[in-house]
Each structure stands twice: as structure tokens, then as C-alpha cells.
Length: 105
Ligand code: FES
Image (tube, rainbow, N blue to C red):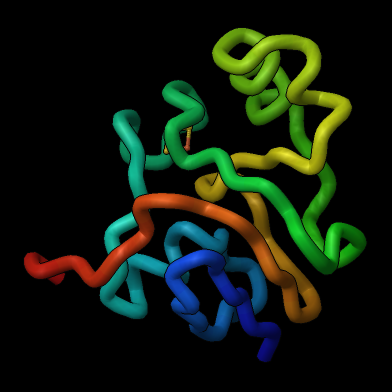
């Protein structure tokens, strides 16, 4: 099962097939910053890919539209994606501030 590692926190967990990385984080007991509960509207779940870009699922229209609207056209040319939309099929390293143990999980 592919692993997601998050810097600078050093958090690491496995991501099952067909599950978004944000859902996998929740299932592993972590809070992932967001305001729309994984509806691809707020873009607060965005992250930057450090290694493993090819392992990410393709960007869909909802994700593309939200990044464009919330983060500007420049974001579409950067290794920036939405945690609530991305699945992975190999190990990936990302940079994301704010992911932490969820005391309510
Ligand atoms: S959780 Fe809001 S866009 Fe991903």
C-alpha cells in the first residue's frame, strides 16, 4: 500500500487504493485543514508535492476549478493539489502545514 509522508511534521501513513489522501489521513486519526468537508470548494486542503508527482491521480474538473477560483491560474502550473481530491498509487512526499493528530478522532 502506498505511503504518504508529510513535511515538515514527519507524519506518515498508508493510503488505501481508491481513497483520497485526506480521507486516509482522517482514517489514520489526523486532522487535515479544510472548510468545506472535502467538497472541493474551499481549497484549504491544498498541499505542495515534493516527490512522487507521477503517483497522483489526474486532476478533475472540480479540483481544477477550485484551484483556479481560490488560488489563481498560477496554481495550475505548480505542483499544488487538493488533499480531498487526490488519490495515489505509489509513495509520495508532500509539504503541508496544519496536518496534526485529531484529538476528536
Ligand atoms: S476540503 Fe475543501 S477543497 Fe478540499
